[in-house]
Image 1: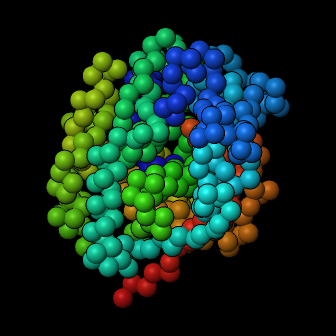
Image 2: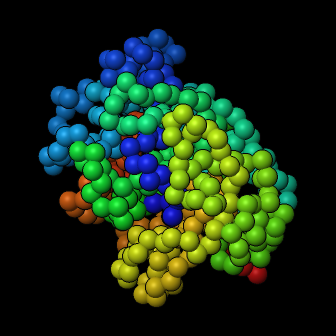
Length: 401
């Protein structure tokens, strides 16, 4: 989903985001994530915004029988919560207090379509605004979300929740998605992580970007902000003063104050334990390091993951993001990730992709009716297979002059 993020080989560790309101002792004991909205009712039920949904009494999202204890990401969110908010109409968020992507207004009855532009289409002022928004997201503590950090995801009494900035919450979601699947505390396949090698990849990538974009809009009050993308060769993006060099393993010279977790350049597989998990180090880039081994041709997933050349769908090649480094924090990769979503959008429109065309499969966590982890409220994997205008954005057509 997010390229080769350097993830922890301390495989029992948890790094994930949770709504702050759902991490109180009372909510955790009740296994309920149905916070009150402004009207004082759970999920804004008195105002018709949503209701508290009990997952236990509903048909399971996956009929597959998973041995216990199963990976905490499978059958999300039932490892942590038996009930969460189910939002009505165009309302959304963990407490139904916001609008769905693409809607705004007091009653979420107005629509808008944001245009995501190639970064070179932005004026100098727009570029500076984008970088200032990023810096603000990196330094502003998230009011709505906290990070779960613990030494063992299977022992609830070891869980502790800590503050993180808005951009760090987004980055930690990527780490959470990259760990291999564990069943009965054993790894199924160390070479196969939870997200990358299945049909849910592009949808999870899409909802992750929407999450960041929405949080940055709320943070800045700029409802028209759209994440830019990076297409084709970009000499200015290699400028040391902008995004840092990309030809050798380096600490990025730009955004010098940015720090990364689980990202030591001398030991990229190491991730600190819960006791010292905030001894962060500077973000670095390490091109050519540790790619996945994936050789399937004519695969939209491998095209998005940059194992196959997009122009022909046949030529095997290694490109970003399979070049290594602490890539969940690398701003250059963020722009490239948005471009991958644009490629996905072209594919959806070319082949009329929609929820009904999501493939049935037996991959754990990849089923059409399983929740896209770790989103709250639940987005079914199949429901993310829709064109971007359904989520309130579209892409510019960039002309490289």
